[in-house]
Amino acid sequence: MKAFKILFFSLLWTLAVVGESSAQCAMCTLNAENSVAGGNTEGKGLNKGILFLLATPYLATAVVGVLWYKRFRRKKSSVYVEEKAIHLN
Image (cartoon, rainbow, N blue to C red; front, side):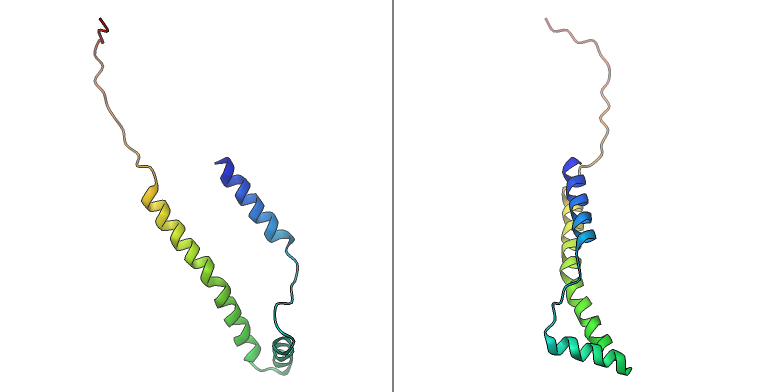
């Protein structure tokens, strides 16, 4: 549980301090800015494509995590033992 908390807060901190990045080439950035300013939907399509590409690894990781959890979780079981006197000698 402690490792989970550390991992969770590390991930939360990383997401909180991430700044804006310019990951597109100059032509793609210029095309997206001009199309949005001109009222075209090309920029929206470009943004949706980028979001789709970003979501795919997270979705795959979530599926693997759920399958792993279902496979290796502990089964809750109760064991009832009849109380008897135990003779050690």
